[in-house]
Image (cartoon, rainbow, N blue to C red; front, side, top):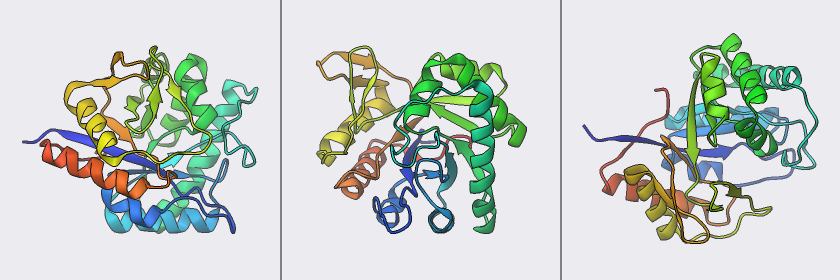
Length: 251
């Protein structure tokens, strides 16, 4: 039996007349979709259309929860308490759940976005708050985070939490992500090579050439890069050629 790896992408981040990414073009090459829930991006029509598209392609639906910051695209930190974070997660889960059910599917995982992702990955109290909100909604939901200490804090609340890796982003030598304000074009072949190395060896080269050890069952490809579809296609093909089967986490 071939080993499995999840390839996820952030989606449904258009809003009103503003459009971001090619969700329809990307969907055939991924196994999990993190769909914006209206806090940093996404609106009811976009949530409905993206959930329907994911269901059509058999792609797992996840809630891409965020701080309420449309103007900053959810990338600006806010002074929020653990209780406030839990309420934000519950509110957004409820919104995307309705559209998932309407599409004949269900929400299976949660991935915080932007600033909330960074905060929960490094702050045990916030990660635990997200996990408690998830468990109250559906204890079978899976949480995606960058790594410790957030993953362990979420697991302590009884939630399955998994570390995530990013073959299309640069890393610092200490394992932190270098976030781009605007995604740039990446060489699809290079990203695909990095994805295979992550899946097969649990390794990734940092910006300075040092090698990071990252054991992650899910890999993210960003849908807002100019050539995102080409990148996703190359990643899927390379993983298949390396003997991997694409399958969502928690399936």
